[in-house]
Amino acid sequence: MTLNGRMFGIGLASRELIRQLQILLLNFGVFSRIHRSAERAWALTVAGEALDILATFLEFEEVWKTERIGRRNEGRLLKPSNYATLMPRPLTDALQSLRKESGKSLRGLYGGSTSEYYTTKTNLNRKDRMDRAMTARLHGYFDDATSAYASRFFEHDQPGCLYVEVEAIERGFAEVFDLTVPGSHSFIANGLCNHNTSNVPNHYTVEQTAKLYEMMYDLGCKGGTIYRDGSRDEQVLNLKEEDKAEKKPEIKAEVAPTPEVSPNYTNRGDHKRARPRSLKGATYFVNTPVGKAYVTVNRNGGDQPFEVFANVGKVGSEGAAMSEAIGRLISLVLRLPSHISPSERLEMVISQLEGIGGSRSIGFGANRVTSLPDALAQVLREDLAAHRDEDAGYLLGEAQPEPKQLELLASTMNADLCPECGHSTFVRIEGCKKCYSCGHSEC
Image 1 (tube, one colour):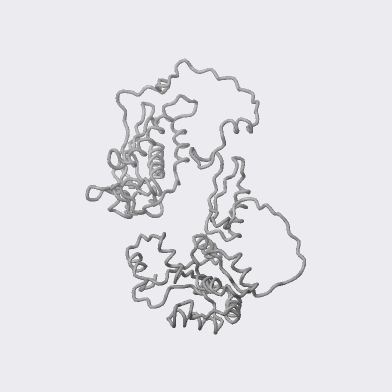
Image 2: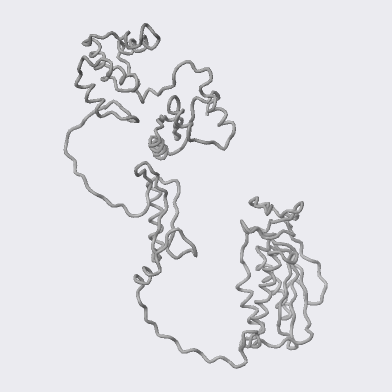
């Protein structure tokens, strides 16, 4: 928006997209111009009479833009107009011929030598393009003369029509075909912009999805969205349940016999090995990307791992919930009756947990911890190694210097997981929780 509010402009990198915007504005009666503003940039501008039309329905969030467009007519000496909206030059020639053949004086139309009279006379003599109102008035005034061109023109002319000069007419033969293009593409249909959304069936493959995105890229789409039927609980377009029932093929599958369930099994966990009143174990301390973790590994009388407890962060935080959940699952695996020993089962758990990466990591080399699960895996491996008399850094019950770790973002060690981005940078500050990664806030 210019300082005097007499020109509004938009710049885009896509020529196709800015032309589509020009068509949309034309449907609202707003004429605009497009010019190349840089090597890979295009600008659309609206000024003159078209800007008055645009100002009747366009609203800006920025106050300064509204103020500028509101004073567009301050100090204006000439009537706002757009050269491209003027009538074609051959119509001016036809009206000049009517003036010469008519017995009426042009001065009589304006009641004397007024400024409008001199403007119209100059336009006719110079064969300049004139606006629709002026040409219609002249054609109605010189009704005692005839012009086939002027009569046919005003018979078909309508408000909002634009007239451009034809550069060339080529003659020849060309074949025309009706084509149906699958997928989604960018186009203007009846002045409405088609958004790039593809609704595909449930059986759509990864290869077909890749081809669809490649086609969007080739067509110059700024972005694309694909919805596969059934991929979300709620979606914009859904088949009716009766349609799904009709299209869904019947699949006859043999039902496997239900295995016999042990009478000792209940949903309340009575199938687990009972926990003794007291157990011996060790508690380990380790730094994790989500805060300091305290991991307790308890063993039964046979010196086999029996249960695992993990505590991270404050009670009620996401980190504390995750650590408690992992500890419960590990304890359940260790206490289930099986021919596999608890130590071997713990090895399997460690192989699943170690190496899991998160949004951050701390430490270097052997002390590198990539996530909370990875930290738990390291502690459990140390505990197993200690009871196998392997060289694992320290033995159970012996005091050894704690390995030093580089604490990145020490101020966020008590941070929670952000519900927006998932990073462990959700910190309570001044009574409100805020994420240092994405800026999400609960206030």
